[in-house]
Amino acid sequence: MVVTGRPVGELRRAYQALHEAHEDLKRTQQQLLHAEKMASLGRLVAGVAHELNNPISFVLGNVHALQRYAGRLAGYLETIHRGAGAEEIESARRSLRIDRILDDLPSLIEGTIEGAERTRAIVDGLKRFSAMDRDEVEDFDLVEVVERAVRWVCKTAREDFRVELALPPRIALRGAPGRIQQVVTNLIENARDAASAGELPPTLRISASLDAGRVRMCFDDNGPGIPAEILGRIFDPFFTTKPVGKGTGLGLSISYGIVERHGGTLAAENRPEGGARLVLTLPVAEA
Image (tube, rainbow, N blue to C red; front, top):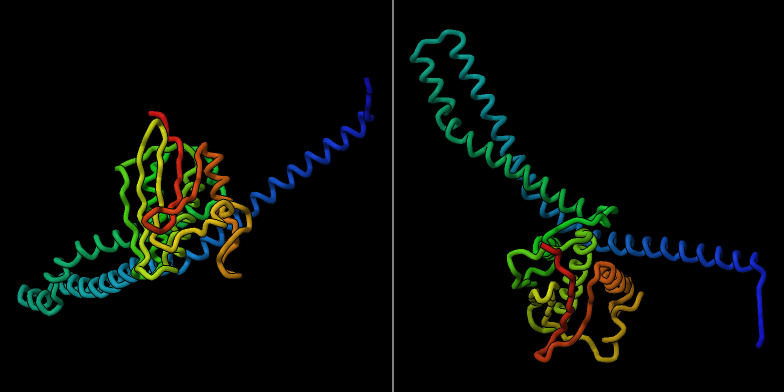
């Protein structure tokens, strides 16, 4: 029998060094997660600006019309208040087109409210995507997350990029919706880039099925597929097939970790008919 030993103080120092290294690793992981998310967010800025331009322009046009109408109404009321005769009041009513103003006011006000609410919804969606504290666990609908991610990505994609959705009305999950949206957005962006490299118009089909308390969601693109020699490496950190400056190689790696923390899996394969398929599985929320 051989007995070996080490001083307790040395073991404590080794444990402390290991603990510090672990904390440094966790901080680095969070920084990488945030960096990849901000990179994805930056790619969406152009689409967000275009999306905001429409309702803001609509509201601005309506406000200018309301401003003109307010001047005419003020002139008409002044005519009434200074005690003008019925004939003069009627003449002012016709010349200032008061009846037309009264007909237009409801639609102008309604349109202005609709444009303002649309702007608020866009800003709220952007805040949801860019928020740092999306690790909060809550109940959410995966279908809403997917539809929102599709809208964001399509705004910066080629005009001929088409996304087909074959999803149930609702998929209830429990977790961090911001993190899951980051995963879905990354999968859609990768499929868009892969499909754009092919000869056919880029197309992505997103389908989902529920079985045994889990949801299986497939992202099928019509691109050239994933070469067999790199199929097992696409989830490795910093591995990317994109040109320098076009990708960090962190998107799929970070997405893989997020899905694992939610009790799910993320896998990749090539479809027999061509193109790649990313398969996302997650546990559904209990009723």
